[in-house]
Image (cartoon, rainbow, N blue to C red; front, side):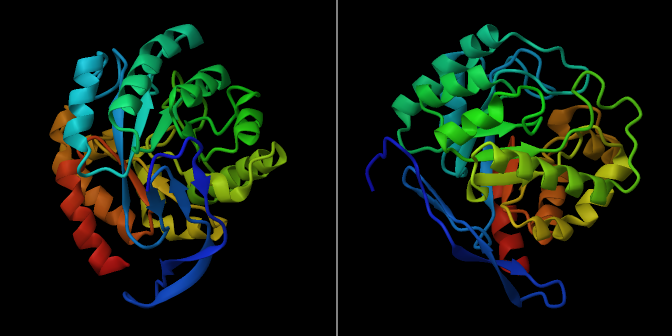
Length: 308
């Protein structure tokens, strides 16, 4: 299929989800599959990998490594055989991260998006931003999807923009905001509280003109959550399937892995990340957002064969 100037999204197909009572019995759930450029995403068929490209000086594990055009293109070339989509971010959302202006964020990401789109015209690209003006410019530069870690809370124009553009959007749960989110996070019931937040976020998004078939959710591992909160969510991922949207998980190199494995350096957390990704797949994750897709690719194939 040739390059499509406007991504096309399919409706009302059945994606299978695992029935917890049987390791091989599939329980049909109606989800909407996506076609973005020449890629077809059939939810429930297999795990899709979202490669991470941070073009920031201060991201928690790879800040400053890929903030030039050549470095970014080299990294994408290495990831390309293993990823299904690319997520580009120009503002760190690590704990205690300081916000940057929309102009600075655009200066970081737009030349990179344009270069990647010119080099890889069929690669689906999402932009990781909480600012509507940045999102609008990124889509114009060649991005296809929006990834908002605030689920539209930080900029009241974000969800109306996504509704106007009719592009897919990932809505993530975060308690608080990056500068304060790890300061004593508390929940009555972390799984139910996160589910309620995401359900309400979807309702707001729909009211802004975003059809549900263009929404995916992310429970936000590591965003305003303790070690025990993260583990409780991962143990109960299947409960999020009742929301009936594609499920994105970002566990790659996260601090909970560092605590469990005594690995203070995020770059030393690959094996723990692979184990966590396997648990995500067992819990029904549709997309994994990862720094090391080559190493995680085979783990996905094996886990898919077992759990789907």
